[in-house]
Length: 257
Ligand SMILES: NC(=O)c1ccc[n+]([C@@H]2O[C@H](COP(=O)([O-])OP(=O)(O)OC[C@H]3O[C@@H](n4cnc5c(N)ncnc54)[C@H](OP(=O)(O)O)[C@@H]3O)[C@@H](O)[C@H]2O)c1
Image (cartoon, rainbow, N blue to C red; front, side):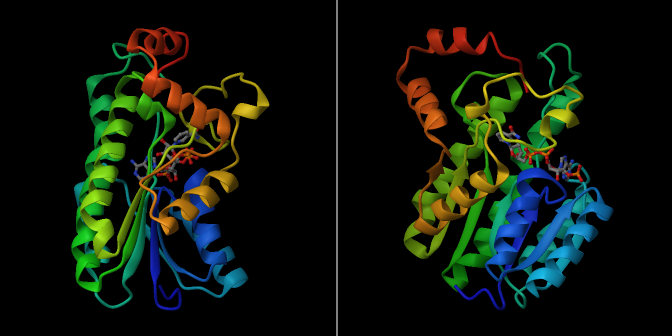
């Protein structure tokens, strides 16, 4: 895959894991299409990456809850010239409230931003990648996908299954799809929920640098699921084999996202 004419589209690129995807792909020589709601943060990052790595960076401010904004991303993915060869569905947010405490509209917003729109973008990307016979898609899910942790876990699970299915159907045709499932990662995620970071031991906190490096390595190698770091690999393995009531009991002590 040539990085000279290839573009990587990253959603949720204004902060955290998404901004780190932009930095690592720019460092590898890829051009970028960056999107999120905060145009100023995107422009600032774009300017840094253009001057540091001499890559082309397009900025498309978009709210994934606004249909016309999503349509602009779909149009960009469909462009034949300046093709998007890698799509990173990363944008997301947590509710930080129990099921009854958040209005149903916010749960539905979570379904849209974390599941409906990534599916739509992945569908568009695959249709444009198939004739080229190559492409990569990273869907940023979570270890929460393997636990019964509210709407957040449910939509992350959706993304894992959608990624695994796409991997099965298209890996033989040059398209790699990976669900990246990080555990707790330092970013703006917890602040955005209006909560402080959960007080947990340091070894459970991942850096965005590590999460992104492992995600890029996994999609390059054609792995459908990537869980960065040993403690979280063990967590996911345990959640898959332990009786559901034990997993539920462990989760009941944590908070919903
Ligand atoms: N941090 C963790 O512990 C953790 C763990 C597992 C999985 N994850 C997942 O990792 C992904 C990235 O999260 P992060 O940790 O990097 O959090 P973050 O620092 O809060 O970044 C979230 C990004 O999503 C964008 N976003 C949120 N709502 C949006 C909307 N309606 N339209 C467009 N963009 C929107 C934000 O940009 P704007 O505000 O500018 O729109 C921001 O760029 C998410 O999918 C999250 O669920 C995070």
